[in-house]
Length: 420
Image (cartoon, rainbow, N blue to C red):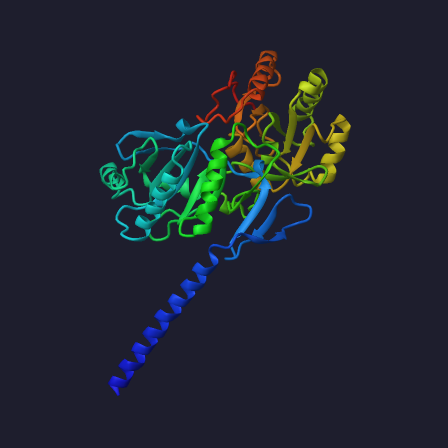
């Protein structure tokens, strides 16, 4: 009886192994196939989704809809401080691993070593981040990197505090960061700090695509404003409905008074001025918006676009904002009035603008946002000297050809006290 059971179990093992081999052969037989089958997401949306032969999603989106990657600081395999701001104007590649992984991670890095050689002479950097910082000290990473002849100025192996690595992986690239489930994707960031695309290291077709895209990105001499790119970046132009899923508001969707959806990334390439208000405010808000209207008249075509965000969305519906804007004679192309989820608006104020946007006690300052979606200055509209400095800053920012990767308000010329 027991002998029969053992035979039966061995047959199951053999059949299971055969099934795995068969399934892997199917996967390998299809991986060389190029992407096919475009599927429109929405006829009114600029984003088109497509599936390749393995069911993976691609998207064709405006370059402006690619998310920005924030500055981060870590430690390289030589024990030196690494600052991503030093990569300004250079494309770079991010991947994740841990040194004690004997198979999967080693194969991943062998593939990176291969494409690194294939991209010899191409101005691109490789960054391999550990997901096990407790064990992957600079000394451990240095020994590991020596196995590939990797030098930090071309291929840096990076470690740091666990919270730093989680922030980079989960919040900037939307990938898990831990030894058990870290991503197997290779992530590409372009010269302008945009998370451009992601690639499967063990899919030959995708790695051919990686080499092609990496060369194209490295060759760019100016931001591809107004152009569309094909990408597998799941964060490209996607509206995330659940606020709890957004750890930090870097860009946002709201609704214009025209009823159209507003996406802050759509303003990439232009400098704009933002303020908070609510239509039922009889004093400061009304005076501030009248000031902005007069500013538009005085500056004419030199006036940046204005974005006014209500702090009372329950009252300031699309219809109400339309009536309010009409009383100011505000052109919907030059002056946007936005409403939306009250929790999101509060977070936009505190996280994006670093301002108070809560109800009646919101900030009354004006905020200048640069061509890359970064807040670079805040000004007291009632102060004549501030106005001069604000206009001066706008002209400086309009001449920038790349993001302010150092972060912070480096171009802030005036730092007035917050006013309620």
